[in-house]
Length: 352
Image (cartoon, rainbow, N blue to C red; front, top):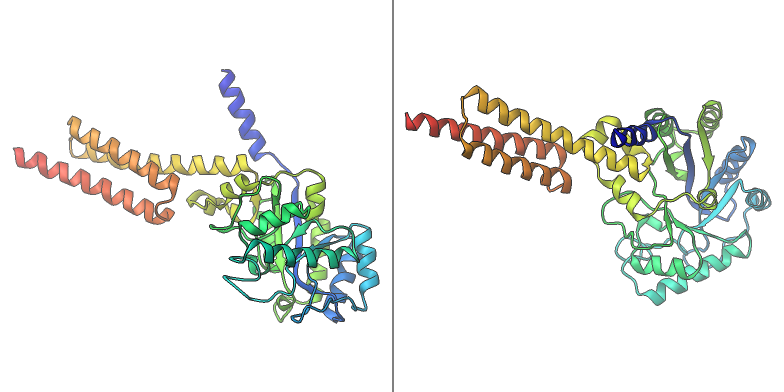
């Protein structure tokens, strides 16, 4: 009875109404005169909604950008906690295996990150967030970030991202266009988690204007159980988002697609619960096929059910470890089960 109560409490926690945390992450921000960036800042400041800016400190020839006409406003927003300045590489050059950092020696990465952080620290409050250009980095990058006192990294939520640091928090992007934000919130309204919207200057086009951004922020303000934060705010409130949490969220499966959980960084417990429930769905499907085959064709031999047990175990391994994509896994399991049923049926008829 006690175990049942504990399970119920756990499920209530997973599915109870929670505040959705939203981070606006604007990439490729440069500290030079730019009317779009100025309007962006004024819009967020007017609505009192914080934003995390992935700032590129230098030009391609390593000259420090620091002459934007909106710089006083940005410094004011930063001092008030309305604009977080995050380091977005040094000059955003595409130098190696996907960007500025991945595949390069530790000393080179130390020099680049130290310089970028030092330049931005000279104007703003200490930089604690790193956003790698093109979402590309490696273990040497994480070592460097720890060395220079960074608290978190925001990249993307895909397989292959290094998650080896035990000190850094991971807040990967979950959606990549402002037009997707409202739907992501509605799909995850009663769940606890973080939605990170990554967007760029080129997202402001015919499909999304600065006026649309203004309307979006008004809608966000009118929504209940929505809290807008920066990455620094998440770190300051000791939000735990380690590598294990991200790994649990990367495990996309059939049930997560049905529930549309991929637009939010879910809690580790919720993501694992979804994974377990997904496994149970596949187990039930396989059991139905096996039992139906046995009863429909009158197969009651030990060999049939031993073989069925082996299929069931293989099915669990395939689904849990993602040897195949979810739909391919289901097709493979069903085909193997059906073939086994037919083989036993033919064997039974041959003995008659």
